[in-house]
Image 1 (cartoon, rainbow, N blue to C red):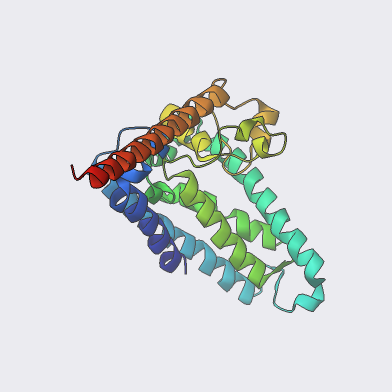
Image 2: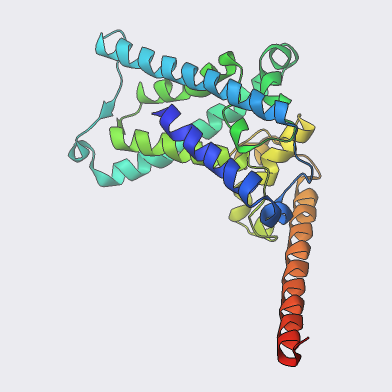
Length: 267
């Protein structure tokens, strides 16, 4: 299922904004240059490695649960816990994954683990959507095991599990697009500032040791691990984007006016 979902979505995003509409999306780029093709092929290769490891973790959990070695609390009858709990559990597993990811991410940034494991992901200094799953196989396993841990403790409806994994995959692809679509004032909002824009993780890829969270900015703010220039850099990226979009619009209007004049006077 991961293979069937990941490559069409990550590849589709890549084909649309990195290739087909590359010029139109250029103002939205965070880093202006594009990575070389060998980096992109590496991301594709490592994504296959990650998908295989995700499958191994999932199948191992399934077999161990079926054989009674471990007990999991995935259920299919919504009436067992009700709709309210199903919605609550969606947010619970999201928060758990965010917490697991932050501290696991900090761990793989320690000297030895970074060199042997996490440096694979950081070969994508200027990531593409295909970098979302570009991990060393050990890191892929670490990325995946938060889910078996959760369902061995907390009841989770099967459909919530499927929706959650799809949801976080979409977010992961978005944070690796290399493009910023959020508003210039995003980080000024008292609530939205706790939700990371794509620039947050892109900055982590280019500068490495900081901005460790992925979806939410809770742990980075609590632990003081946001880059000190993160917010000013975000304003720089979005102001440049808005300026380029404004110039494009003005040039389009100007060209349209010139065309009307030429047609009116037969020039």
